Length: 268
Image (cartoon, rainbow, N blue to C red; front, side, top):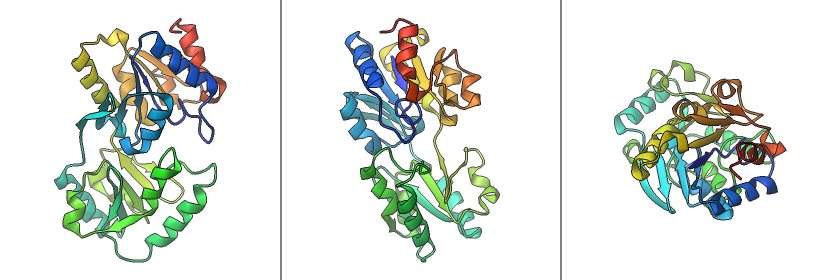
């Protein structure tokens, strides 16, 4: 079983997926291997990519969602009590909080201060500096069309990611200390980072030995699955934290790194 991160791994930042990567995935499948995407993206954000690459399985939302044969088998969300604490602290420090559900975004904020951020998002989404949202423009729209709801409705939403605007005091929010805070040009965000739990669920379901698991990744949200697996392939463009945990470092994602590693180990 092969688990591939998307951004910076299968898909180089600001570039299309290479022909060599597409052919490598196709060849791996032809040889009887099972392919999974392993990403921080929500399922609705990667459906188009799964169809494009003819991949039917995925560990999404940083491990919170497991998809097998295009069916959701397992999902986890932020607990209501935890969301309530985060929302309370954000109000205390005047931080605009937006929850990312399966297909939509929600906020309890009713003012106009959110509008400049949305406008900036629209502008930056057309540049190479944009790294929030989705790997395609369709799901990206959900990050720009944010619905205002009351607190009760906000807490009842199936939330797998939180985005913070006007986040100058974000470090004061104690209820998100357990998460990695990702800072962007105009916002911060937290999301689940336990891809290894999704892999463990799949291993147990199919009774697969850990030696038969291969993971590819490049970023901080891949650390947990790199510490979990034995066969860990870091892209040449990976962060140092990933390279230090890798059993093998391949070429960069935009230099046919996936094909190189798979040929090196005679997987194709």
